Length: 533
Image (tube, rainbow, N blue to C red):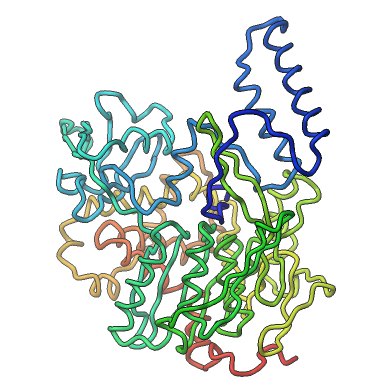
């Protein structure tokens, strides 16, 4: 969540010498001198050798925890990887991979990218990178990213195992600029209803969205489902530009208030958007945060969209990145943002970081993910939309249409299957074993006729038992429809691409079905007070 927390684009350079605070200069100076004195004593007199820079980083991180959950310190060595989350492209080979049993396994090469052109295929196991073994070494995904990425024009040598028992292949793959897309899928659900999935608000998100929106409009779209579920946020200006495409006239989209007037801002709609009148539904859930909540809040407050799903994360704090002299970065909360009606939807962090990190789990225990009436609202934080509907501040944005989370996803057995990547691994191996048959089918034929059999689910459960996950027959029966759909979607991902993955996954998605129902009966128009108030 911290990776998606940066909402402001400005960067302040760290000062080369100590500067006293304008708010409390004496207190700041005393604190600075005290810390400097303690660190000097530790360095010179402590019984063991210590890494004083590491101690300093630790002290800074713990200090920021006393402020709020989203102010954070990023050491210089981690800053590039952290920033990559919000980049629109990067230099690499263009491959999606995962870790199965400590083995780096290719999920899919990017179409037309250097990995695909070099011959990398779904299911290939990467044994070594530049003669350094990577499989069976407890390597992390972050470490693997670091090995595969590098300057455009350079090459990376991969040792790849395609089939067990075969001789490893040696591939030399050139690095080039790779698009890091944030619009994961855009297609027509039916003749007139489009679907766009946005995974984060990165530097290129608005341009990607405009391209997708234009393509769907040309295909005859008159209604749209915008999927912001699981979107952790990103750049504020990309979020407001996207919201502006839906809201006509000059209307407030978001405003911020900080301790200093320089952090007080107001953002209004100002362009003639491409979709200001058609029916609009926005899918949200407990993973929708930050900039995603800005979009959802603006559209709800102006009665422009119907929100379907569950209450959002509740992050209403704005961070500004401050680059320090050594290349490290301070992401400091400098303001709160408010929706057009005046809502601050930041949830409480008064009980400290541990309680804050457990808040989503508490929602599950309290039944909120299953029942709309379990959502706690503070009547003192009551606000009204443009058409007079009642909405609440104080911790996330509640949907207009509540959809319970699939109960199967809460089963411990299901969670263990997911945590060990067994569903993806089984799907990938199935694709490898049936590649010729699948490639002979058009996606439409696959979608219509392909089904996961009970025998295949039993085989998945057997493999899980071999990995130490005891069979829970009751849970397996409960999860069967969900697991079958996920397996089919992952197989489609390998055979037909990312859009096919979402088309399969969405075919039994409860929130999406509720959105389509709302579009069909006209509720998404929000021409009247839906709450009855």
